[in-house]
Image (cartoon, rainbow, N blue to C red):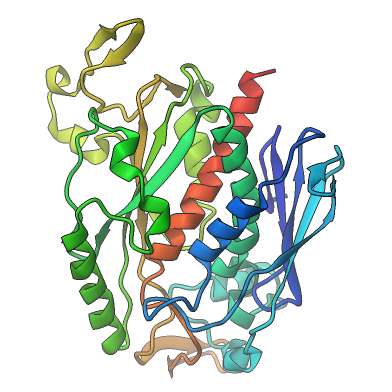
Amino acid sequence: MSYSFGKNFKVTLFGQSHSSEIGLVIDGIEAGYKINRNLIAKNLNRRRPGRNEFSTPRKEEDSYELVSGEVDDITCGAPLCAIIKNKDQRSKDYENLRNVPRPSHADYPAYVKFASHNDIRGGGQFSGRMTAPLVIGGSIAEDLLMKRGVKIYSRIKSIGYAEDCEINLEDINEENFYDFKEQVFPVIDPSSREKMKTEILKAKEEGDSIGGIVETFILNMPVGIGEPFFDSLESVISHAVFSVPGIRGIEFGSGFEATKMLGSIHNDSYYYDKDQIKTRTNNHGGIIGGLSSGMPIVFKTAVKPTSSIAKLQDTVSLKNKSNTKLKIVGRHDPSIVPRALVAIEMVTAIALLDLVMEGEK
């Protein structure tokens, strides 16, 4: 099923943007794990809409209920099921879209694939709303990874042409990221935050939207996690990250810049740091041959502009088989980047834990 991911830590999503409930089922958590509700609440709040002028005003508290798999917050070995009740839907905002597909949304291909029975409300199962239950599963995965010493951080590298400062891939440590998870706009250089906000507000005032780049750092990953070829570490992370709506690209380490380098520059020389083997540079981004190298794993994710914008757009009428215009109403993010950042971290945690558990067998 395309709504399931993982082999050892298996996550299955259910629901749609405007269904009465959304949620997930997790299979593979050992009995006796104490569920970290504080971490789940913190990450849900980071992703939650309606917190500021940079996100949709849709008010969803994202309170959840665990309906199976635990007793007094201790897992019992059965699949863990979490449910979030949707409370602030405005389905009437989508009544005119049944036969008029929105540009850059999944409306038209879903209309064809599901023989016009697709749920158009809020984007149905294609909506970013579905990342809310993913955050629950990702928070559990993140907690289990932290118990193994593995930590995940992300920052907003850019919004439009407003960019945060560069960071040396070989000089990454946790001190760089100590407050990232407390920030709505996690950046290294605080002055870049205001430039990014200006870019978003400008797009919002013009009835438009804007995208950006999220950069993710994985620290303390054991050496040798992953498999060659189809289950390479990059493949599994990319598979998970591309499940987040709005993702357009991903690159690891020096990424596309590697195409401009000579091999003598791109190659990362090994050296001993006491009893640890490290590389003097980290153009490989912590992954070689599909396996973790022990260096920090670094990747950038391209997030597209929000597809729903207030400007009048060209589209078609499927009913009349003619060209037409569309004015989208409703409540939408002028930029999904700050909230997508959390979803990227969470699906990365799910992917990593699944591979780490495989390596522990």
